[in-house]
Image 1 (spheres, helix red, strand yellow):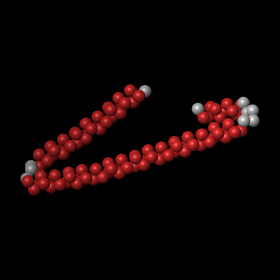
Image 2 (image 1 turned 90 degrees about the vertical axis):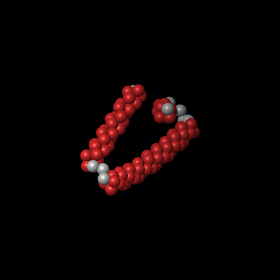
Image 3 (image 1 turned 45 degrees about the vertical axis):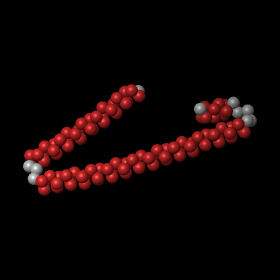
Image 4 (image 1 turned 90 degrees about the horizontal axis):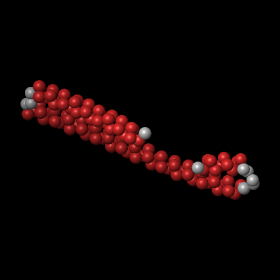
Length: 110
């Protein structure tokens, strides 16, 4: 909107520099606000990413502890392999669900 008004003023330049300066000021303020919002968005994204990395590390630690406890209890190797296979299957299901959800959102948005 601001750019269209700016182009109109250039073609109809009738010496109204004060109005053009006001529009340029509004444009600069709008760009500044947009920059601030983008910086906030990037900060939130970085915080979420670091949180996910921390969760992944904790889950790996828990997985190792569960396997250690299973070995101490004396679970058989076949049971342990079945548990590991189920983990892999669950991961495929989660990623497949993510893809399907993103496709649904994409098709609903466009």
